[in-house]
Amino acid sequence: MNQCLRFPLSSLLILFALICCGCDQDRTPELGYVKGKVTINGKPLAGADIEARPIRGRPAYGIIQPDGSFEIMYKKNIPGTLLGKNHFSPVWPTSVRGPSFPDEYLNIEFNVKPGENTFVLEMKSDSQTWVDFEPIAISGNSTITPVDQP
Image (tube, rainbow, N blue to C red; front, side, top):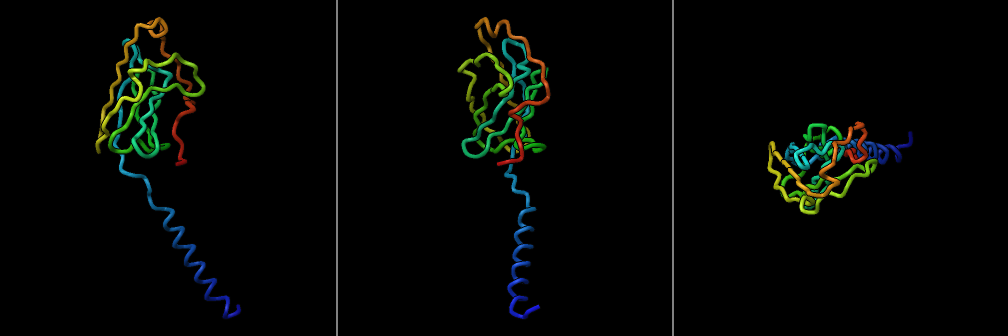
């Protein structure tokens, strides 16, 4: 190989190796684990999701289970949400057309601390839509489930 090409080629290979090593570092910020329960008029809000939207940074989501329980996920297989003030709201997955949630239960501020946190949302509504509400069967394919993309 030509002597003039060896040094630049070696330098590029070393630079590429350094860049690749940096890609393997865990870039997940410190998170607080959040679990809880969501009900409306005493019934679990199964079929809906819950969103945790921090003041800055990516939102996190949880699928509300048949018993009303949930676990917030920052990314797929990474539980938690960013520390500090988060606004929690129930949301319908894009595949579900549910009734509008009562305004007073949207964007509830909750301070997420390191470690385990519990967020319980017990909604009440006199609206006939919610009085007659029956939990929705979960298909397991919520379209709002977080993915590994930023």
